[in-house]
Structure formats: structure tokens, C-alpha cells
Amino acid sequence: MIEPGTGLKNTMVLFEKARPMVGMTSIGIAQAALDKAVAYSKERRQHGKPIGGHQLIQGMLAEAATELDAARLLVYRAFNLIDHGVRSEVQSAMAKWYATEMAVNVTSKALQIHGGNGITKDFGVELLFRNARMMPIPDGTTEIQKLIIGRALTGINAFS
View 1 (spheres, rainbow, N blue to C red):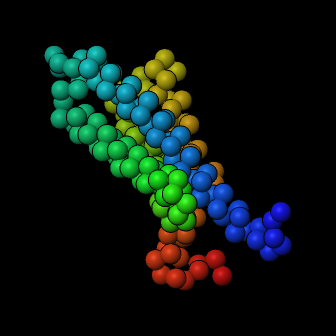
View 2 (cartoon, rainbow, N blue to C red; view 1 turned 60 degrees about the vertical axis):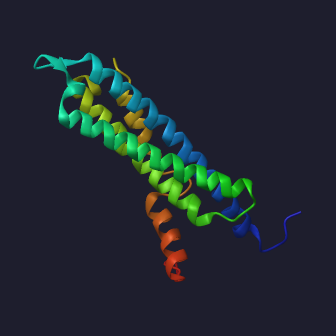
């Protein structure tokens, strides 16, 4: 039985577990977009070579891969703390914030790499972008995650 007056605390503990799950979903979306972008960059040719041979395309792919890896590590850290029974409010907020915004960035890059083809339904990138764009909203928006982190850093509650 839940003790009276502990509802908010219990809810916040559930958010600690849910937020990295949203982050992991975002990682899956971003990984699919990156995989599609890499494959497309090897197939699509421009100026006599695959577009993956152009510096700006390689730069976008490198940024996407690095952002994806960083998000994965943040989410893994949050899950590891949860697995060990350690409170992880801040780490879960960081993981959710970064992973969901990363998914928006990575799917946007994938869309850009596909050019005009990216906005068609033929390549699946537009669906990944739409899915990624909604991920920052559930279990607390990006702005809420920032307030949680800021409160932990300063000890000052921005909600009161």
C-alpha cells in the first residue's frame, strides 16, 4: 500500500525509469535514419561519385554518428543507475533530453542527405523525422528536463 502523501515522490521515481525508455526509443529512430542516410550516400551519385564522397555529406554523417553514440551512453548510464537501485532523476532527465533532441537532429540530417527524396514516402526518412519530432514531448518536455537538471545544480526550485 502506498503511504498517504507519497504520490508525487512515487510518480517521480516512475519518470526516472520512463525517461530513459523514451531516450532509447529515440536512439532507435535515429539509428534507422543514420543507416538509411549512409546507405543512400553510397548509392546516390553526383558529379561523378557517390554523394558520400563529398566532404559536407561525410561531415553530416560523422556528426550524426557521434551525437547518436553520446545519447546511447547517456541512456545506458541512466539504465545502469536504475539497475543498481540508485536514484537517477538528473541522469534520466539528461538522457531523455539529449536523446530526444538528438533524434530530431539526426533525422533532419538524414532528410537533408536524401535531398528532395527525403520528403517523399519512398525512402522512409520523412516518417522517421516525424516520429523523432514528437519524442521530446512525452514524460516531460525538453524544457522540463532542463529545469530538473538546473534545480539539481543550483538547489533552487524554478517551479515555485
